[in-house]
Length: 251
Image (cartoon, rainbow, N blue to C red; front, side, top):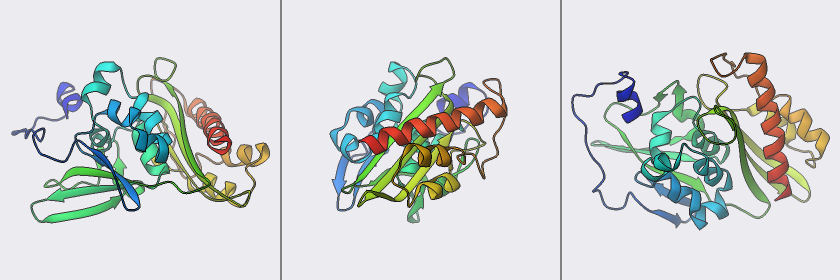
């Protein structure tokens, strides 16, 4: 909200502070998922042991979100609702198979992360809804995730020129399931279905990783901007897919 107001892209008539609502500032484990409340700061997500155990990619993405001031004030759910095309944590949410919980005066609904990001700065939230919770499935034996990126000013800080989050499930030495989330290259954070499908059924060797990475932008309309051409962003997406997959499969 604040970045959009600073850019004069949004001028709300009324701003509601949810900072005093109990229960929105916690990360807790519930049944088959971990719950991240709407007031959980980026730094909390980055350093939380439950996130480290069950959602490594999200913790990495949160640690690389903005500078220290941003990480101390901004929230993980805020990054989701903002729906920036180059934000880090949305890619991780997609790869991890997370669910967004939206609430309004008429009730509550769950929105899969892969369906939540509609367009640039546009989410699936209705005008009368707020995002109150992010739910990430708890990890199972043989599952792992990772995130890698290039920031606009180099390194891992700032918005992503290209960023890739991966989640893999290895069963009996074979990749039985996989998801890959991509940010920074298209008009919204997206699921790279072709790349993930290519990896499933392999043993995750170097050739399989390279073949999967080659497909990472299939189905994604890569856009050119001030930070890179279509060719450059496509190349980066492949590189970070390979890096993230190697990290996840090694762990």
